[in-house]
Amino acid sequence: MDKRISAAAAVAQISDGMTVGIGGWGPRRKPMALVREILRSDLKDLTIVAYGGADVGMLCASGKVKKVIFAFVSLDFIPLEPYFRQARQSGAIEVMEVDEGMMLLGLRAAAWGLPFIPTEVGLGTDILTHNPDIKVIDSPYDDKEWVAMPALNLDVALIHADRADARGVCQIEGPDHYLDDWMARAAKNTIVSCEEVVDTAYFQDPARARQVFWERSITDAVVEIPGGAHPTSCNPQYGFDVPHFKAYNGSAKEGGFAAYAEQFLAATEAEYQERVGGLDAIRALPLPVY
Amino acid sequence: MTAATDYTLAELCIVAAAEAFRDDGEKLATGIGVIPRLGASLAMKTFNPDLMMTDSEAFMLSEPNPLGNRGDDFVQANESWMGFSRIFDNVWSGKRHAMLGPTQIDRFGQTNTSALGGTYAQPKVMMLGARGFPGNSICHRNSFFVPAHNNRVFIDGECDFVSSIGYNPARLPKGRALSDVDIHRVITNLCVMDFGGPDHQLRLLSLHPGVSVEEVLENTGFAIAVPDEVPTTAAPTEEQLAIIKALDPHNQRAYQIKDNPPGVRS
Image (cartoon, each protein chain N blue to C red):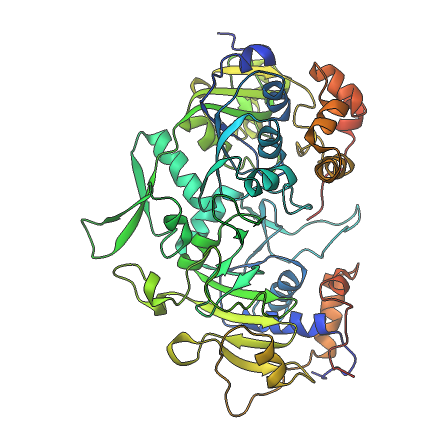
């Protein structure tokens, strides 16, 4: 089985109004090339589920988003994502704001085919006040009340991995796979971009096989896009692009997203990479120190 | 142990932050921000070596990492993998103490990290989001660090958005007690407090050198409990200052409190 397709073909599988989960965390290992492909498309009214960073900000700024399901949206070293902030402060988007762990439980419920997972997380907070759809229920086993975190069923998950074979065995080599495995499992259609497509024999090394966090049956499409996480990091291959994020953040104050898109987005990913200094420059970006 | 005479307010707060972790035993200490992280690290290096700590990325460490660039020869003391998904297993188990800096704190100890003003559909200022505050606050012990103690942080009335559960009877979930909530210490540039006053009222524990009770009251938007005798926050020892310096070789602590004032007011 060969699951390799182009970024354009992958994004063509997404329809208006779909719920799209995006892997990674803040400025780390986001499938940004796939996000850029959405920016170049006519898609609209998407519901985005993410541990959000510039992926969420860019999609909001370009009018692709109806609703964001989030616990935070941040660029880390720039704490507040500028375009998500603008979208919220102008009332342009609907939101479902949850705790980081509630999001994980919602993805797990979806992955396991459950309507909800009970948790104490969220009790006593405005998460419940502002999400009347999240119900609080009695337990059949004790006298306490519990939050019934609903399943976050995804139509599509977009994830960026280090390597994949043509059948969809995906390796995340960096120190953390974040919640990407749950995004993949919660989705009907999991699209994985990767730095490199490798032969299946690559995974014979047990250390590499340990870096595979979901079965290939979960992966529906593989898109080879070296540098495809830029400007976010793809540790250990490259760090996030601090000057680029600063320019992006600055554009929110002057010029707006249209100016940023005009300067960088371009018609193709190859042209985008040329405009940000080329693949070698991306690969040379230093890893962040925490 | 020699009490130092020459130290900054940031260093005083680091030592006060360390004290907050003294009795935690074998818990994951998570200090978000330079002063909380240095406090947790100092505690682990001195009086509570059983604490656990991560590299803020994906590994648990047997020795805290110094802050900032550590040079090419530095070898991080990993002891296990601890990615973000596993952090939630730890959070939900309760074996954690986090120290964080919320934007608003109200009289119930509820905090806001999400949005200010306007309406929820269109807030005046959108901030980070609830992050992990709802889960942290109901699952384990938390402390707060506030670098600028004023009425905009310690607000009159309830938080614009309640990100974390506090000691608010009106929001108490069925089958739970207010004493289930564990807000341990609130450390600011003026003082150290806890919620040990009557009915979980915020209570003054110690004043930093040269700070008056009046100054704290003026800068807090609600009434707090003030004991008859309020001690002065303990000064760092020379040994503690040396450890702090080693943990923060690039002196990031100098940029955490406005104008980096001395620990003892002149």
